[in-house]
Length: 204
Image (cartoon, rainbow, N blue to C red; front, top):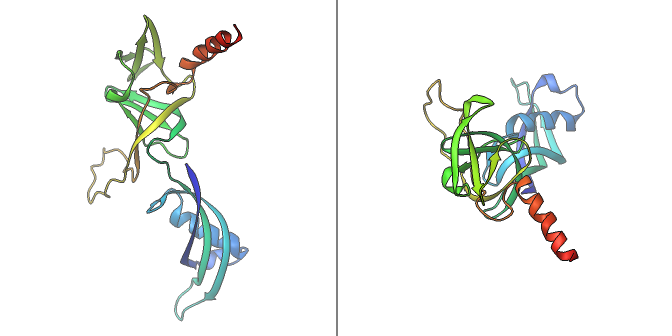
């Protein structure tokens, strides 16, 4: 899910940061440039280390100092088929939205929720719908009460829109589609009782 990637780039450190230690100043610039940005290798979530910085030239008539920098970043790069633990964020008639805290564009569409199920108004949140899985005459509500395990089905990188309506949702440069329709997936509370029963069977 996470990996380290080494990169090299030209970094311009503005005059107001030149009073800081060089590594701190360069990290601040790189964080502004790369943090939470989707690159060709995945989503940059952290600047891990500065390997080297060469140069420091100030061009005539220019304020920033220019460095050639080698650095390592932490990249969020899930793969199809990977099982990830997330938290519930919201739900509507189209399905679920999950979050990892640093990344919130994870969607479980209605066809990838275990069936039989139903979608009903959430009695605790008038602006939200909630999903209920029905199994052996028992009802299992999907909410924010516990961790949710999902399996990655697809990762997409939508093109940046040239225009966006004022009331449109914020643009998501990376979107993950997941499923909870399989054994061991969904809220972990669904499977805790099953695990306990299996342990009892093993003891006997």
